[in-house]
Structure formats: C-alpha cells, structure tokens
Length: 131
Length: 131
DNA sequence: CTGGATCCCACACGATACTG
DNA sequence: CAGTATCGTGTGGGATCCAG
Image (cartoon, each protein chain N blue to C red):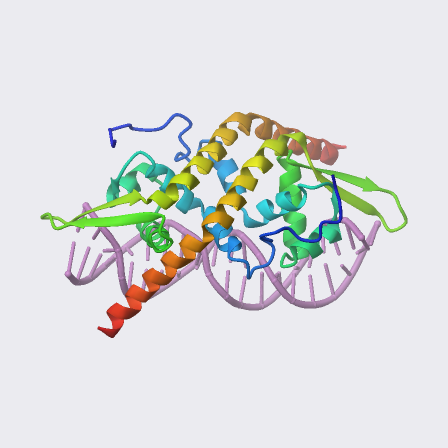
C-alpha cells in the first residue's frame, strides 16, 4: 500500500504544475464564499458584501477580479442612475460549485466529530499538564 | 432560481458557525497536500517532506499537528534506533479524500480553460493599455 | 530521524478616504 | 452604488539552530 510511486500523474506537488493554481484558488477562503453566494443567481456588489458580512470591500473587489480573470465569474454593468453591477457564475464554475457543495455538506456532517476530536486532544494535553 | 432565501441551513457565512472551521482547513494549502500525499498509505515525516518538496519542516510539523488534533490524521511512533514516526489517514478523513480527489480531477480537467481565460483577460488589458 | 524554539520579513488584509 | 488608492499592522511562513 506504500509502493515507491515517485510522482503522481497531474502531480500537484510541483509548483510549476498549473493544478496548484487551482488548488490555491480553492484555498482562498473568500473566493469559495463568493462562489457559494453566487450559486443561486446574480448578486450585486454591495449585496454580496452584506451577505458575506465579514468581508471588506477591498477583499471582495480583489476576489471578484481574480475570479473574473479565471473565467469563473462574469461581470455585467448596467448604466442605471447609480450604476448597477451584477456578478454571476459562468458555466465553467458550474461543475466546481457541485464539488464545493459536497465539501460544505461533508463539513456539516462531520463537524461534530472533528470538534469532539479537538476537545479530546486538548483535554489530553491539559491532563498531561496537570500530571 | 434566485428566490429570497435569506440564509442557508448551515450558513457558512457566520464566523460562529463551526462549518467555517472546516472551510478554513480545506483552505489550508499544505493540509490538503498532506492529506493527498497520505492517501496511498502511511508515510514517515521526512518522506512527506521530500514528496511535497516545497514545504518547510516547520509548516509540515504544524500542519500535521493540526490535522491530528482534528482527527484526520493519526501518528504512530516506533522506538527504533533513530526514532521512526508514521502518519496515516484516519477513517474520518476517508470521505474527505474522495471529495479532494474530485477537486484535483476538476482542476486537471479545467486548468486549460482557466489558463486560457487568464491569457485572454490579461491580453485584453494589455490591448487597452496600448490603445 | 523527528521535531521544538527563535528570529525576521514579506505580504495579506483591514480601515480609511477619495472618485466616477 | 461600485469601486480605487494609500497606509498601517498582524502574522503566516521560511531559515536556522538545537534537542531527544
């Protein structure tokens, strides 16, 4: 079960491998939150801000720009009186959302076990300290 | 497809929600890489280091500790002459690995489209500058 | 071999102020 | 409303040295 196996196919270990770029994007907490928020349809800038709540406008703007650059989000501006801008997922992002949903589902299903493990671990440490 | 729907069940937006903790863990680049490396069986500390390559021993140690605390990885030390330590996935991590595999698979499948989007985007910018 | 402890700095991120 | 620009800082994380 642990053969030599020098390096896997796509090999995400090599920083050169573009797969790492995607991993980094998934690793971006704000990006994931934004994608999830856009799941049910187009949302305007300040709406996104309010929905996510904790995000600063700088990070939101920055996150949206990088997501747009990656072709995961599209931007549409309407020349209304105060300008209106809508963000929505692109078809490309569709498949990713499905996976992200699985992640959040898994998280909801197992967060109990994980928190329990943390308490057990921390408790063991505390006990060791007391001993 | 875009009803009011004030807030989703688990609501990952609220920092209080423990689901966010899991998201943050997934958001940890090194943690994901470590989990993926452990997928095919137990691996020793320095083996992990070499396989991942770019990681510093500090981050590896730190990542392993937090994964162990979360009950996703288990540690086994053998009192051999130079001490030997093996890390392996716990059953709890099993389901997560499946999802992580989907992520890497998706990444491999769509990295081309994403890189193309980036080039198109950057090219458009460059053109705008030149104009 | 498996880590822990320290030093240190780049940079991610938040807060604030300003523009179209 | 939808951003951009600037500044200050907290800290993630690398490099290095040391210990069991």
